[in-house]
Amino acid sequence: MTQPLVEIRNLSRIFRRDSVEVVALKDINLDIPEGDFLALMGPSGSGKTTLLNIIAGLDKPTSGVVRVGGIEVQRMNEDELAEWRNHHVGFVFQTFNLIPVLTAFENVELPLLLTGLSGQERREHVLTALKLVGLADRVDHYPRQLSGGQEQRVAIARAIVTDPTIILADEPTGNLDARSAEEILTLLQQLNEQLHKTIILVTHDPRAAHYAKHERHLEKGVLLPPGVTYTVEERA
Amino acid sequence: MAIPLKYNFRSLFVRRVSTAMTVLSIALVVAVFVGVMALATGLEMALVTTGDPLNVLVRRRGSDSELSSFISREAFQAMRFLPGVQMNADGAPIASGEIVVVINLPKRGEQKGSNVTIRGVSPVGLALRPQLHIVEGRLFQPGLREVIVSRRISERFEHTSLGDRLRFGKGEWKVVGIFDAGNTAFDSEIWTDVNQLASDYHRESFSSVLLRATDEAAVKEIINRIENDRRYNLLAQPEVEYYEEQTKAAGPIKLLGMFIAIVMGIGACFAAMNTMYAAVTYRTREIATLRVLGFKRGSILLSFLTESLLLALIGGLIGCVLVLPIHGITTGTANWQTFSEIAFAFRITPELLLWGMSFAALMGLFGGIFPARQAARQSPAAALREG
Image (cartoon, rainbow over all chains, first blue to last red; front, top):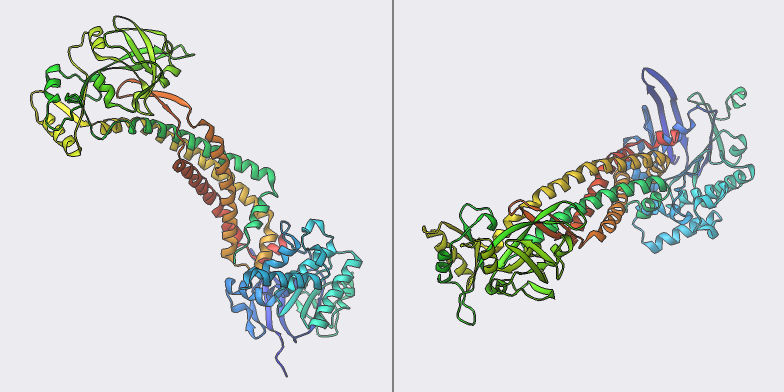
């Protein structure tokens, strides 16, 4: 059996605020194979985003191990993590997080500035990525000149431009209308099916989860067994 | 590669008002700093550029300036024929016995007056200062109560225009010429015939003697001979050195300039700091995003420091432009060694502008370092949660 792309073993994350301890994640074990499109679902505060942040090396587990592509993420220091993220992780946020003073082109180019690519090579990569998300005609637009759906597509172009190992999307449709949300989810699906990108999608929208290959549910920091969904009352 | 500069540059213009206020405060500090330093530089240049390296100025030992000095005519005669003193075409030694007095003149447009130096010179004295030339009217005639006035003094004092009459000594003196002494100390003086001045003031002796040496070695030799002559108790020094010593007057102005600039600079530092802290808070999510994309802490620190520096340098540049028009404006101050007015112009040199820009950069760095550190240290996960 081939090694999974993401291996999570006995992972816990406890936040300490003053004397209060909040268990955000409790003894999580999860394998995500390469080429998977996994929807991580759960109510607010269930630990979805915390898990995603730990996989991206933005947060450290209190205990346990996260391996991505065989590399133990929690062992790297801040600068090593930054470099690793640049090469291996594409992140898509709920609030798009585009840099408002940079154009679509410049936003997508940002992660490439950390690679050794020449200006011409960067330009080609950026244009390919923007074409892929259907925004080839919006390269010189600033975020304020784009619709929410277009902004998120620019963010996806920025996430894929370095050809990362894994794409992490945190509620990417949370700020979008139904139609734009559908477009974004279709785009993610295409990236997974046509370009074989491994995607972890965090959402609490069951419709969004339908685009993924698999679903796993979190409830109060515990990863529920495959096929088990979190309780309906909380979903309301 | 670092975070592109255009990110910082454009970000500055997002918060226009706060950026403009900070830029303005830094501009004012730089303008005041460069302005006061231009005053000190102008004063220094007026005195430092005075004198010829081959000229030896002799005055009585113990006197601070020519005004409080006297040299007997006998001593003058002895000095004229010292070895090493240059001879003119006619075979006469180039040595000038001069008398310096001060008179009080009312300033133009003001009630109060100020002391102005009157120098009595011989034709040799004029030849010793080739930089002095008449720009209006003519030279005074020996034996007549006629004076020539420097342009700067003429601009600043009453009764000193061409054709005016000045009352001092035993009568009225006619202004027959206006001169320019090429930004030297003589630009603060009124000149006349030494013998006429001696007669009006009952002076048997000279205030000082100026000698021209044949070469640099002769300068030293003449100084040695005069200082070792016990009969006269005189002090000889290169003319250049004498005027350089008087530049001490510029010291307090410089000190004042620095003091004002530092106090204002601290204020401007806080303005820059405030703007940068606001920028960091406002852009918490952007900073976190940059970190997620792979930019290291060092890049974030450098980026915000650069932004602060950019802010300060724009301010510095505006400050320099604001202060430029004062270049060349004539002003005056009291020279405490001669107790007379010294007229000089604000001098803004490229070096001074560089100092102004460096001062601005320093304010930017100090104002930016703490906010930049805060930006670099924030946890991206926490910033994304809260931002």
